[in-house]
Amino acid sequence: MADQTNVSSDLIWEICRSNNAYLVKRKSGGGCQFSKDPLNLTNKHSRKYAGFVNNKAVGLLPAEKGGVTMITKRTKHQNRPAANRHEVTFAGNKSGPKVYRGIVNYTAKQNYRADLRQEAVARASAIRESSKQKKETPEKKPMSLLLKASPLIDELSLFDVVGTPGVTADLSHISSVAKVTGYLKEEDGLKKALTGADVVVIPAGVPRKPGMTRDDLFNINAGIVRDLITGVAETCPKAFILVISNPVNSTVPIAAEVMKKAGVFDPKRLFGVTTLDVVRAETFVQEITGEKDPSKTVIPVIGGHSGETIVPLFSMAKPPVDIPANKLGPLIKRKAPVLDLSKF
Image 1 (tube, helix red, strand yellow):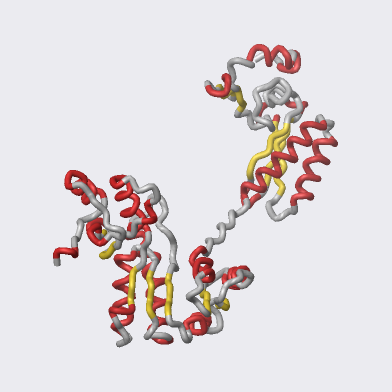
Image 2: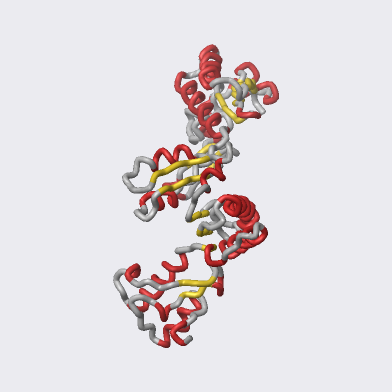
């Protein structure tokens, strides 16, 4: 290859601008063109920022443990690729201002363009931000809000492993009858929360996420429900227990077995709770009856919470609904087997 120092950078660009290994073309967006050039800080396919053309170019790459590696070109070794690059790594434990100041000082000393220094700092900031461990968004507590708003509740005790003090403080500002107290796991928090309870609502655990099977869900939530029910059996065995934690078909039997083992099981005080099957039944019937507001039709649903264990009682709907025989069959298959208690 001819000595690149004798070749104009503009000429190199004109020769390579439409055919180089870094060029990325997109059919969408009017045929946008980008660059994979590691010394192109903006990833724009342009003469101004093309690192392989310009004698002075800067690249920023992620380094280990949240660090940033800055790559620059040595103008004295244009024809020696192995000696052409100079690398400086800023450790991840350094503060952002120190890293950015180091980048600016080095590039300024080497007489790099001011806009390159600005782009280098922006890229370094983006790399550092992306390497930070993402904090999980705190799970919202809609159930506690619904309970606080209910006029039927005099006292509301909250228990969770994290976040309870904050939720308690927020709920205490709501103008309703219930007085709110909150407890964490430390200092016998579960026992304090359950003492004197008449009703225990358990929405604990994780919701089912995409790709998660019922077995995966069970493996996580089963232990949580078991531990909470153990506390109920010891502290308030006469309370009505409402289990919302999924999979309900499995968590309710676990609760029953824990209560049996403690010798305090009462089948009339243990319930699995789900509203999803109820609103589905009401919506599917509304599509047949033409009722403008499906919530005005109440359809009881009993049984379990999966497959054929879900039993909507269409014959006990209030107000009564008239489902044509030719539509009842498809509705049964869509929802679950129909149990008509009016015939018993």
